[in-house]
Length: 437
Image 1: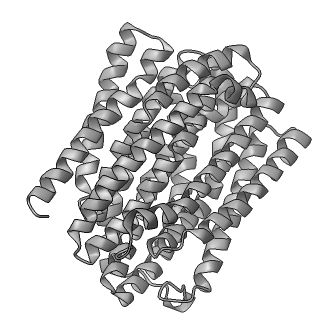
Image 2 (image 1 turned 30 degrees about the horizontal axis):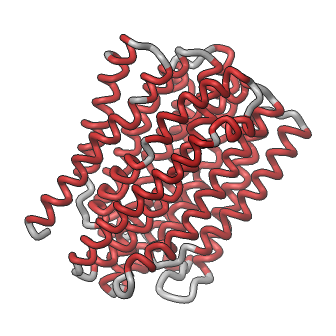
Image 3 (image 1 turned 30 degrees about the vertical axis):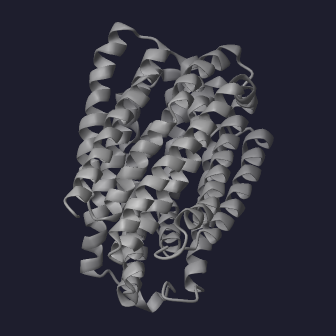
């Protein structure tokens, strides 16, 4: 990460993450497709309504894994092996404790958040049942993400891919068993998710205990180091609040989606799932730049950080545009995999064309913010998100969408607000580098 051909190494590093993302999305798509095919649009809408709620609760704590990733990358780049060991043995108990707290918080807030979104009565019960089961698996989700973040920070992106593959296959098989065979509906999907998440967590912990090198997990060394925890919090808390701020604004969008009816809710669930497929390569590149720029910054090589910034920004825009173009070209066929409801497909095409045509905006937002975090500047992405994303979304919903309450006008809020935030991220990075930081 610190030496050698940059573009080649970044691409090689990102490929397993891309496959991990694709697999994760395929398994999520299987959830949605199984529910849509075997249960109907009502259950599909219930899964859609639960998404922003689970995202809000989980992303609040998930930022801590970003903090662990950045610290591990910086220590690896600087050759500080003992600091790297201490960070690992702090991250594991922190993730376990945060996961238990998160599970309790999610269960306590589910009803309040679903009501705040204006979830329709015919969808509310299914969304509630799904979330109450889903939050049982959150401790395992956090543990997996912390462990995978540590492995990726030191260059190991293959084993997280293997673990995700195995847990995902298990998830699909359990989905078919619980939903198609036992007709358990949304409960079956949630149970399958919990079991597969737990399997992934067990595998990543086992890998860390057998790791040959500085990142070997030793149970007797588990101890929360105060300075390493503070380091993770310094980077991770702003990242978590930023993710939660995104999710709060998504709750507002979801409440607006809910106001347009069950068909639009189901179409939104499907279209957003497809949008995530388009985003997966850019997201993998974003994860790569955290480790690469973190190690380069730890080694004091700011010129290499500049190269990482421009190379990843250009490559990400190309990948996002290509993925969005392919999705738009085959939109009706792709939507048909999820549902045969003509109204849902029609709305889904309308949403997809807006999200897919502006995929490059995701790159211009993700890359600068992740590089800034890897350099220790974690507050600016938070402030930019709160002002440019959350603030503008509130304005858009209560002005433009209120004046023109259509599906297209509602979903234009995504590229407009992300685009505004991405401009600030690029300008702030350039300003920092001009100052020599």
